[in-house]
Image: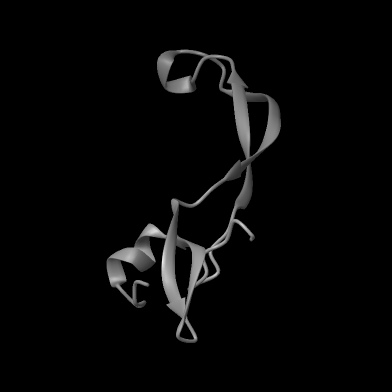
Length: 75
């Protein structure tokens, strides 16, 4: 079972964490520079639920936005 929403297909997104150094110009410095960055992942809020898929109960991951919409039937 993938860590994706069974209804909308929402999954992890990739991004990066940026570490900055130097004082900002507005604070009297010469400007902020990017020192280094590392990759990271942004995960959606997935919950494991038993729902009916094709009239059969299955345990799947559903994002909280789809739970709020209520586009499914509980098993």
